[in-house]
Length: 287
Length: 287
Image (cartoon, rainbow over all chains, first blue to last red; front, top):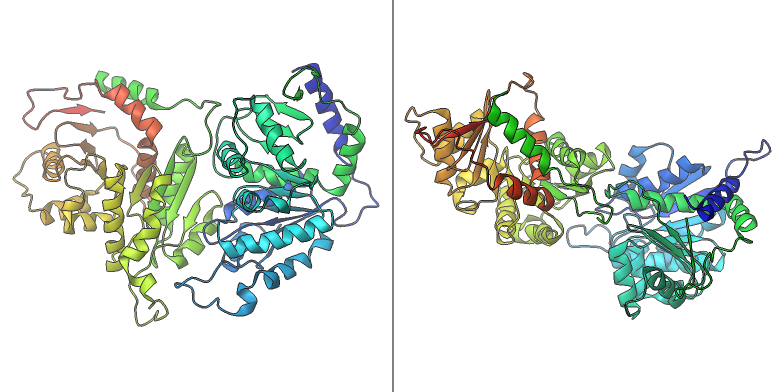
């Protein structure tokens, strides 16, 4: 472990907020995961449950009604809200009322929850349905207006690549693409792979989106806001099962709740993560 | 344990692919089980879960909507797709639109998934509904065109005995009949029991289907492609509960994913499993 890594880890430990007896329910984190659809129920469960296990006081899932029934059955620790709808299909003709197919109407119930939340995760088990994506786009805009941190993963990255203006310039947006998703997003945004370093490619994407945070997952993990980049080059577990990325999003959400985020700013606001100023890729601290 | 058995087992150990840090999600196995119906939800769960526990990165189940709700609730580790439909009945008149009773339309959603999968298991908890079987037949044809390994068990063996041309000559089809199913299939295909050895009967079935792999489960297990036969004569557990055969299909599917199958070909491509060339039944290695 390098000296930089040791230093960063010791600061990370300081980020863990104390449990004060004066705290009341919800003060140490209220997270909601938007995802969970006809095909996927495990992903939002792993994400929300990870936030709870890392210490969030309240963990919500917002998904379709059939997914909600299942996710509720996984654990009584999650609050699961069946507010999302997928587009009506010939095989499910019952969902044809205006209220259930109009994205503004659907989004309004979710937006009404935002004042009670600290962080949104959008994407785990979301799927690719257009109505689901349109609803999410409206929620992203509303969350941004309120200055809420948003973690975007999985199929929510398609929303970003189709409408990059939703997050462009928003410093509290975090994108967590894996290798395949990273290639797709960069191509969609017209970022050419000019043979630069891995660090350089991540920084390019973060800059193209005006300084959002990009966490590219892979053999090494790269975390960049376009200016500074951290490289996680520890070797972790080598299994790559479905669900691991979802767990990561929930952990990140917990790290972005008010208490932890304030601690982060106090602790890392002063750290120079550009370990090597002469590095042509912009400098990367090794974690 | 015989010398041959020891040799085969040591080679089997070599088949286990290494976990490389460069791998990404799904590279070490993507399996889907088609099964799960009004009456059966445990069977496809055991099958898909066995593939996950043996190490597959992603395990799917494709079943009817009511079965899907239940199977999803067993575990968030499986991805469960409610794409199958059984024939409309007087007691379930709601499923009467074209899309939900037309096998080509139903199969098309499943066939669209095939490019993202390595191996199909068809049969656990499938039942005998004609629409379910017609849908499976179309999926088998599409999977065969793509060169995907297919494990067929339980009621999917009825599809094979009614339409043997679906798998005839397809070397990547594996049939796993128990004693009762074996008798039914051989009778349906007009294979007479002329008093030959057990090994000979299994080889006859494999040859009648043009070199598919037959795994006959029983007191001993016989594994044959019509040319070579292995006999598993170890005494395993003596309990014969429902679900054991389903578990076996999921384990086999994991063994047929690209990485493991390539390792198998490297390791067993050269082994002479015909331990006794003079054996009139074609020779059987004892495992």
